Length: 222
Image (tube, rainbow, N blue to C red; front, side, top):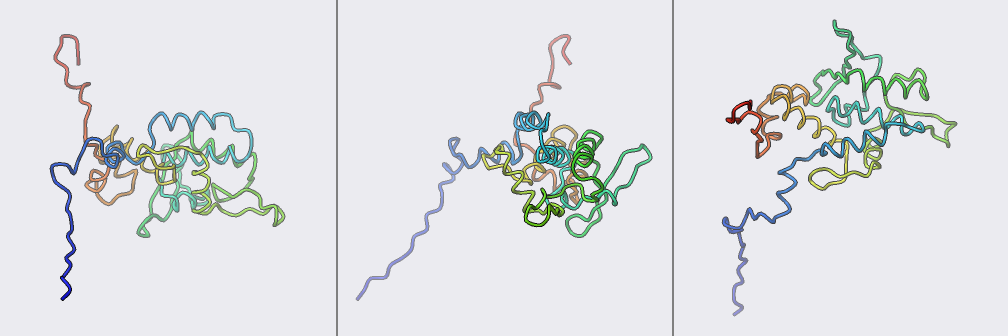
């Protein structure tokens, strides 16, 4: 009679599950976005654009970082859907996740880069970001697709804090994390378009805090 064979499932030992040399946890520790130094590197690379691609990529970088939009939201931005605030700022109206109407304010610097890109290469295009001319179709253009945006950002050849190749959503993570660190959960929630600051806090609260600027006791400090 053949002996019954049992499958034994080995669960991780709680005492060794969170080892300090486990590389999996390092990425989560530092976040899914880009480091400040990597952002500065990208801005430096696009500081003096030489051709249409560089002008377009600079505009994409600045608008993405200033708005924290998802890829599908970023590519749908159009001049015809802008609103001017009482302070004179330009705000874009778009349909976001969950079919909710949202607004994005890129700021004057990002908008200036977009305008330079349009003035030099696009003329009266309604969409902010367009494809390069299609040589096989009489130099026709079309609004940039989500897939096209992914290829563009991947071509920047940078890596995130977690070691992944750069992708459009990493730019969103970068901006929301920066807002969370500098302005708190309410600011980060509004930027991300989350329904609740609790959602933002869940994903962007760091597992450590540097309180050295407020924890001062020596005379003359604080």
